[in-house]
Length: 163
Image (tube, rainbow, N blue to C red):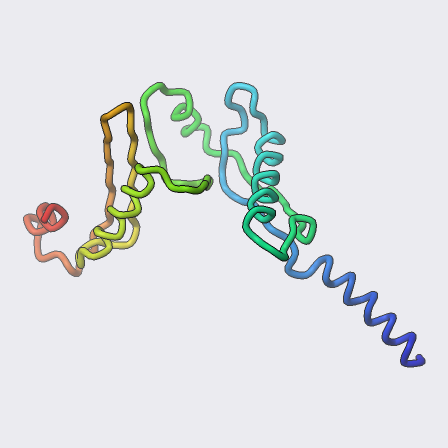
């Protein structure tokens, strides 16, 4: 094969590879397939549109059209669906992420608390913090796994987090 044809063949292969390799963004997590009128395909569409918007707003060179987005968001356990129908504020382990900027005061508080908790020698890294605010009332719920090898006894465990 003459060098010109080889070069063109390699360019075509490279273009095909560029379109497929490292260009897929998988959006994963769990959601409830139906809350009011939001259905499974709406969740997929919302997730993909949000990811495209994030890329567009946060990268100078990378564009959404450079990426093939695939939504693989599954349906949450039916046991958890009731959580979404309750009036009171509840939280479960994060199974689907949502983010925005700038951070609210509640988010700043949660991040600051996490940093402080990570300074506690007995605290593990599996930290869950839920901050809610209704008008002037801020409520904070914290769950922290303890590292048992660093905790002397049950009494020490009770008080190590509150120092």
